[in-house]
Amino acid sequence: MPKIIIERTVDDYVDMLVSYFNTISNESFLKVSKGEITREEFLFDAENYLYKVLPQNRINDTEEIMVKFQSYLWGFSVLDPIIADEDITDIKVIFHNHIRIKKKGERMGAGVEFPSAKSYERFINSIATRNGKNLSLINSILSFTDNDSSDNWTLRFTIALDSVTSSREPVLHIRKLPKEHKSLTYFEKNGLLVNEKQNEYFKNRIREATGILIVGKTGSGKTIFYNGLLDYIPHSKAVLLIQDNEELNNKGKDIDYVPHPEMIFLHTLMTNGEGKVTYTLEDLARMAMLFDVDYIGIGEVKGGEAKYLLNCIMTGAIGMCTAHGSSVEDGMDKLADYVTYDTPYTKEQALEMLKRLNTVVYVQDFEIKDVAEVMGYDDVSKKLIYHHITFE
Image (tube, rainbow, N blue to C red; front, side, top):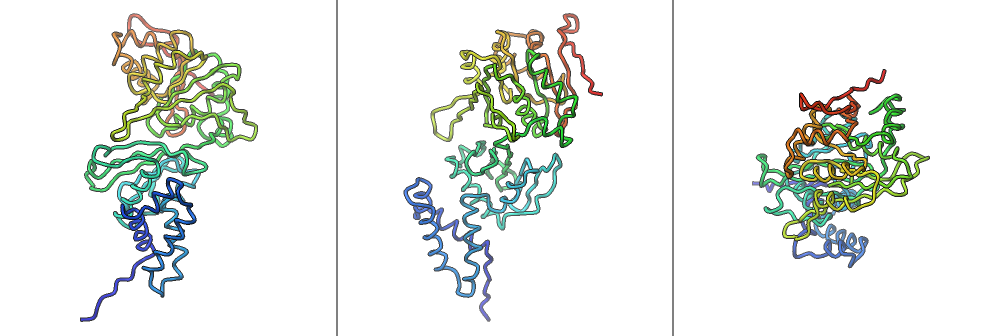
């Protein structure tokens, strides 16, 4: 019976390289990560290994294999073109061969896939190792931010390992956040997010409001709007912003952008595996009360930190935050619920105090759907009184 020869693909050889240099017995990749050897020296070792396993009739594939190998280790493998696309905000790998994206607010197939489940698993491990994260049973669900791998994007990775997924493959979600944000004027001119009247309203409102709450579901455009809104804070005011991931920034993309001179950003530090140091949003919000600031903002309120935001705005600071919700009213109700989690206040008492967040913006699918000003609190109905703004 004739011997069956299976012809390996370029991706097979890339997998072979990744597997070899990720083994415990081979420390070359670890050394280049620590800076003990240069990347060039590492790649020289990798190419020498490749020549040992590559058949003579495949030598011409060396360059393609090495390019893909480097992308695997320091880029994003098959996801490279998606990461580079400015119109794509979210990437979701459901299976190794089933990848979805959100482009200009619409969900669709990515048109790319990992060559195998093993290849995808190695990519996950590579991303985690690059960011100093330990993937294990104790860390089956992990979220972290990568500020170094892309020149243009801060990347927020959320990983669920196969130990907690029914598919028996990891699930990966990547949220792309621009390192230099675009102004609300840019979006207005391009027919996105805000129109001319809304933009003018927010430019004035950020100076007049006693607080601003931005409401919407995940991926609705809240953070993009929040970043644009920060540009309108007067440079004569002091600003402190705290957040889980480094999504808000003081770096504008417009040619005439001038960074705010006194805008401080703090972010959480979460336990990794057996690490002992953790600073939560609640810790940062408590510390924020010691700062001399005119504006205090929280990236997203989702727990006990709400009471510290409330304390800050009750002392006169202008508060800003985002929260999940399906409407102006729903978002404010949810914020009141968070205040009651760790305080003696009833929901009605929390709502009455939250009236200082007197501007509520509802964002849906990268569009401002509703804006309401809080006019007061109704003692009879125990609800806030809203005046919805029209822009016609």
